[in-house]
Image (cartoon, rainbow, N blue to C red; front, top):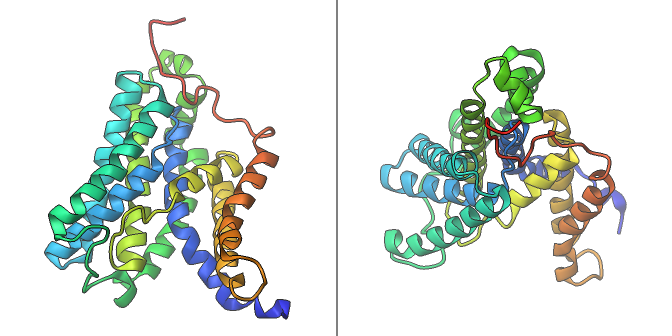
Length: 299
């Protein structure tokens, strides 16, 4: 097997497309984590966004309504996580896990109710895969990279970004100088939900043209890993998402070309994710108040 047969232009382009849902979810998680709220429910939000996008597109015949449906679902899921984590101060890992379980169960339950067939929805007549530029998945791809750049500018070049980072690092000090910690965290968690849901919509109406049970395939968790691997920065998260997209694409490319069981090939992206995170996590420093509920009465 010639190595040049593997590292082709196609490998690069498919790597980018596979990284797009990770980028949306990873940048979404970045907003939440930078404000001090751990968002482990990215997986569940992506599922909700993917399902809602298909439902809205199916009944309206309009892809933009499908994308809007995903955004609404992401807003709701983000708000739910915010209520649990910020208002009621539920352990953020436990609350996020509960939302993941809820999203997985709810989408599986609703498929036969809405479409009359369990397991998967019927294929859509309209998808971003088969439309002109502004209704194509390429539009969503370019928007993902634009989102990374805008997030970098927002976090490091604006006063509002400074407030977000201050809330994530030292909420008590931020509160002292007049920054509304609760509002900032709520807005960031909701933005996190919106972007993760768009990542889910990309998978369903952007690529597959349908929704199937568990179709996100743990991409929400990989996006969270990419966020850590990228050291909680927009550009670092982008690089990590592209790396994990490459790993995912590599196992697909190598299947049938090397004498290794397909089950082992499917493990490649996850094994490399573990290896990458293991080498970085000890040297990465998350926001100081990440995962810590804010209580103004505490000193």
